[in-house]
Length: 573
Image (cartoon, rainbow, N blue to C red; front, side, top):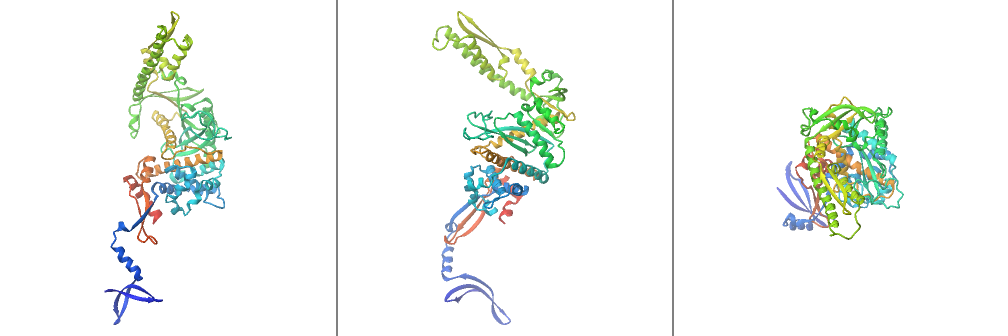
């Protein structure tokens, strides 16, 4: 039987709950709990009449799911330790590795400028997990502690690659290469060697551009090596630079010669690049695309000679309706295996596109023809009088604007009664020649005679993975590289390294998730896990509140990911 007793200590009454029991014939306390002073007991009585909702004071919410998921995979990869081993920290602030990793996580889940990094960091679970205070992550502190050279960035990337191979078992015997660029907002008068005016792929000719060359794996688009280069450097020149680097860096990482097949698109299949790939001290195998004018004989082979593509049992369904014809032929002065692929579905889409473009071109030509007739009838008198040469320039400009139109349309410009007139027509025969000789066809080549047609095609088609990588890094929600405001080459290089690191961690995560039986793309798991925040609810006395901590429940995907990694228990147990 329990009771409440009073004890006076230094003139103040304190109350206890006690339970007594007779032991050896004497009554003794066997359970005693301190309850507090009379004022405290009164407060407890008064609060007991309030609902939980009435006791709540406020709540604090921080980002958890996507932030900690990426942090966890980075810890498994040893990102911070690798960076710190190459670029040791200064006396103050966080380590260089923590600055870089924090910025990479930010780029992945909620891209902000470096000036917004501190505020974002403060609203995440990272301060609790790392023990590092938010005021360490001001823009000034960040740049003061990340003065890393381009050579150091390459060493860091090579160490990351070696660790990725060891920990996650990625296969780098077949790699996809491509390059893109990102426009910047760097002032024209800035002396940057990286930000240059060149052929910007986003068509921002008014801005300076920085190039990014990337080598990725064909399965999960995991970046192998990356290189930031001047925006005015041509793709073919950068290709040779990357191949030289790839060979040397691979040798440094693995200690052996590279037995690698490089896959690249038609923009990189020059004589010089193939000479480089086949050079004895470099020696890469390759699969590439060809233009029609490079193998006209192959395109002229009748479709009746094509055979259905032989596919393995586990081949994707998209390969089932392909037809191929292969032969050994001369390409850039060397004998290689060439494969031409015919895709009826691709042909249908191309014909549809030609029909649309034909109608648009006809409308443009009719517009010129109509204006010439109106001038001949005197309905138009103002403006410069057309000449045979000026009309020809206008017509050819229209025909060159859309593919195949110059071949399909025939025209004549002539003078009648001192007026320039135009007639034109479509050639059904030339359209049929285009359909028979070009549409639905893709020409490929390789130096590997041991590869089947299916292997050549699947290798080349895997090149879309690097395009996906670039598309992801231009995404405005996650992993975006832009905008680039940095005004020194070292800062530009560090910024792009951070963006590639963020993408690298996400692609490794995607591979790891797949191996745990969870298949989803990067945006899906970032969005799903982004909803899992940690909420701390404060209630009771405002001067000394109590708190309850909990996680927001997510969807089925986030539940499966949490179950696979146990992040909540791992970082908040």
